[in-house]
Length: 340
Ligand code: CA
Image (spheres, rainbow, N blue to C red):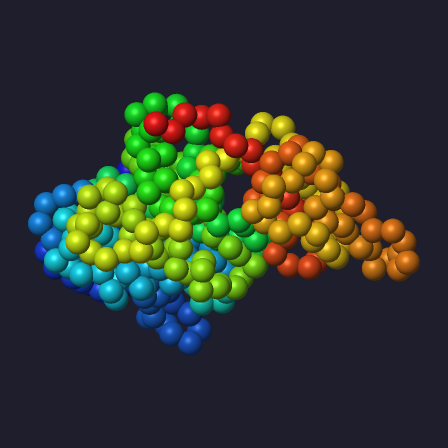
């Protein structure tokens, strides 16, 4: 159960009205800084009464759309347009963002497998614990912006989970559609233990995530979608006034879901991946999506990677080299889950 103890302090007062930007101070004693601290950026815009929404980016340090959207929103969102409170953590795994790696270079931990964390654990565990104990309880909703990172590239998608509570499922889907990504993807995680998603949903709160681009690079389109999508959801939830100018979505989202069988394809051999289909394209069962060349066998025919089912290609490898056991393909199909 919740421990009120934490080793983390902050120079923000989340109960104060107004715009505040500062840091979470995590004790971090190192060779070059004996009594040093890690300062993790955080901001809060609070204006009058209304819901509290927590925005997070940089859960994985090689996914840049989230941090960019969060810093942009902190710098540009008018306090007068806020109706309630928007708490922003642009870089949840800040040390990982600084090295451009998925996992923290300080303890090797994946932030999205560290929840609910430990107050006296490693840096990643302490941060997860602080978020879990201090930032989630007052939040009505959480938006956590992900992209594919260095190992994957995704069709631009807002992501929601299949939930057992029908009311929460309906509210989540409506918020997902408000985001305005080309795809709204419904899924059940392969392994949900330790995820921020699970921590939020188990408290009965609205949670949205995204998979926008990837490959450890950003594009004007991916950064714009992350920022504007978050702002559209904030307006949908009523925490940002409609008077604040946000671009409309290019088109309604295509609602898709990953089927129980054939949606995830794993590489069964290592090799250099040659993609032949781009993410977002419709494919048929049996269609070749790419192939793997083995440097051990120059001149040999490459191993084909083919779609097990028809649907939309949601993911392809984000780097050329693929190892046996890597997920190389995610396929999703038109959702049968009702949205209304
Ligand atoms: Ca991620």
